[in-house]
Length: 368
Image (cartoon, rainbow, N blue to C red; front, side, top):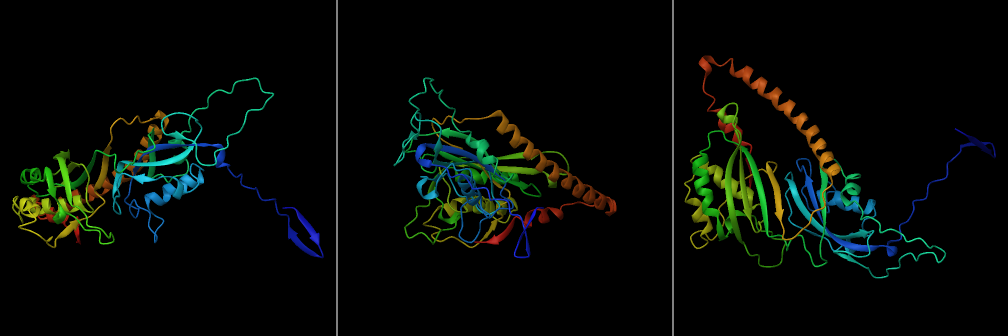
């Protein structure tokens, strides 16, 4: 390290600091786009930005948008989101919409912002500048986002597009172990959710809103499927899929809590109809709500959106998920080996029916 001497005091030679180049946003058009985002929310504090936590999906996306200079500020970005997911909930197809910097001057969603002042071509230049390609929004954002949050694709949309209000349906999946649950009874009961109903007894009312909230939602479809049929019956994983026009706060987690009670024989299937009848049941009974980490926002449907997919982005996301899968798959195998070794010590291959309760008890631990 170089040194220089002043009045007998030795000081280290300081390299001049690199001045960060400021981007002149006035030279760029804006474009209203939709972003498709996937995230593993198990270690995150939910999707929505919070005053008391920076560990949310939105906070990290906002930081990435500012850092990559795709937006100048959130206040001027015309931002909207399809839905808000709770703490530890994941998503495969969350959708956002906002105004971002664009390389284009024409096209769907492209507009000139206030104060727009593009670079004028040099008078001496006789060459025609070729039209530049649009910014690769997914690649740019993924370069600074954490691995658990990935932008899968983007789509040009009209300036009036709103990720929340233009969504025609949402699909959620909830994964759980079969245990001793009566899946047939649960499926029969779940069919009673289909249609337009008042779901006030299947949600948590947001008291922070100073307006009367409508709890009427339309469920289009529900379905139970078996994810893996191998191994012991009690360890079989299942998936509950529900599609609706929109969902209330904690609605799916409340629905799953009631369906679990039906599957365990603690409630009859007609409890669904009773809870949906606000005359017979005007106030929500107190019951436990299932945890959020097995829940995934799996799809958000829109009319006439043309998503821009890149093979490189898809392969990078697959590689990231594979690394995560290997980590968990090995841990699952270690745990299963330990369990099987312990079961081999049981006299006369005793039944594991008592273990089914343990499989479910940790999914229903939150009071609402």
